Amino acid sequence: MSEVAVSILSVDKENATHTFYNLETARPEYFHIDVMDGKFVENNNLELMKDYATTISHISNIPLDVHLMVENVEEVADEYIDLAPDRVTFHIEALKDKDRIFNFIQELKENNIKVGIAISPETQIEELKPYLKYIHMVLVMTVVPGKGGQKIIPETLEKIRSLKKYLEENSIDIDIEADGGINGETSEDVREAGADILVSGFYVVSAENKRAAVEKIRG
Image (cartoon, rainbow, N blue to C red; front, side, top):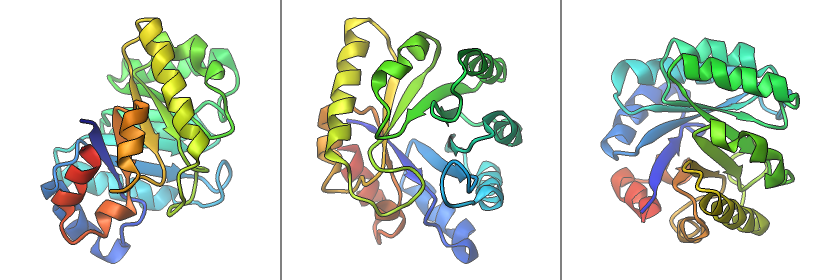
């Protein structure tokens, strides 16, 4: 059984607060906040996602799982620290300098925030290995980051399997989160590959019975 993080990327702004209440009753483990800057990825939703995250922090006790798809990682992360998210995940492709990565990891930890590093489909898990003992989670993108409604790239499931094996062989106890194309049909394959946390957006948000949709993802 996996944990579920509901992405709010597809939530309609006019009905957002009502939708967040409905999603809370579905009892996911996290609200997943996809933050995009129009540079690292094509879309820009910086203002909207901060507004959504702030609203959720005021009305819900479900933890925030913040996923930064941005170039200026440190600056954008600072805007979320006051919301006390459970975890903040940044892309290794955005922070290429090792010293910068370790400094940012330390900054998040000093603010009692769990640290995740995300990798896009074209990035190999070898790039993560220097940091795995210092973080709490790896987010494996199972689609190209930045757009909803995509189908899972099959090769990314093998990446999850390889990462899971490496973590077990090296006694590294951190979570693997998978994000992209996860619904009631694909979730079983993602769980079997070794993901601990499954991110699902439109499938849950659009479901008439959101609780049942979350349970289907959870397995």
